Length: 132
Image (tube, rainbow, N blue to C red; front, side, top):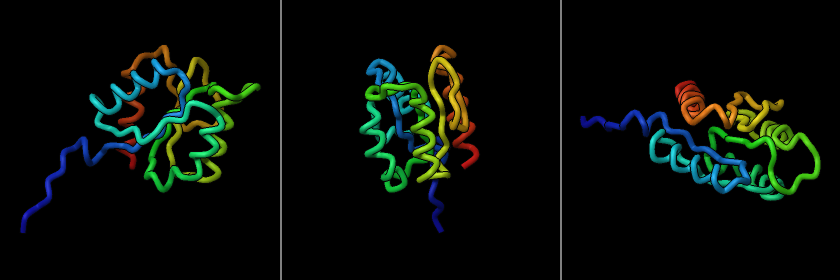
């Protein structure tokens, strides 16, 4: 009987949704996450309106982790990342949430400072993928 061989990257790759409004950050995330870290970004929401629209469908997209910026366009108050975390956890409690910003915010399972460099985010995603 033939055995199906799957590379480690495929077995442990995450399906990730990104909540971020900075085009440069989105580009860097997509480049690193998909080309070097072996994961797949399945979508990006750059405004709170789009985030609210897409959150109900994250389960159908097979999302296992979300990278969430502290501040998205379209909100007039603080707590942007916290609000998105709350909405996701209410509807999809098994999705791992990575807060990604200058300061930590409540609701995320993990937090990575943007200034800490890509290695910290890579390590966090590896930790998540090894726990799934």
